[in-house]
Length: 220
Image (tube, rainbow, N blue to C red):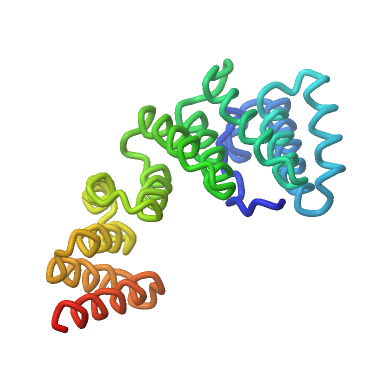
């Protein structure tokens, strides 16, 4: 089973290419990027490279690539477990942002598998590390919306609106939570705010249709 995940954007504490302070750091960054890129071309080859790199002392970046390759090869639970294990032990050199991103990647993998409780735990861990993380907040809000947990969803939506009011998602999720509780006028206001931020946002248009249908049913 293939799990679609966003491209890994880990900073890697190895320093970005433009800021690499040593040739060793530069080479490690190149090796990591190459390993991740290989996953899309030949995941089996990428897995072999990652495992070889790990045995050569590649550390946690090699393990991240190995986990991503396993996810692509149809072993998402194993890959997610590796990511969580890495994040929980926070190896030397891993900064909080990277640790949080590993939790999010694991949560996304588990959510795609329908492992809702496990995904929620991973997102909770990411937010415990970085309460202002927009990616983590978006990921958990998506899960809460899918589960119909309106009260908790509204709290996450409020946080998104506070820290990223320019995103449609925060307004849309709050509108969805209000729709779920029957607060149709407030839900409509949030939907309009979401469309103001992103006029072509398809989920916001779907929310609009759901509110209209709820109003029709209420009138009937």
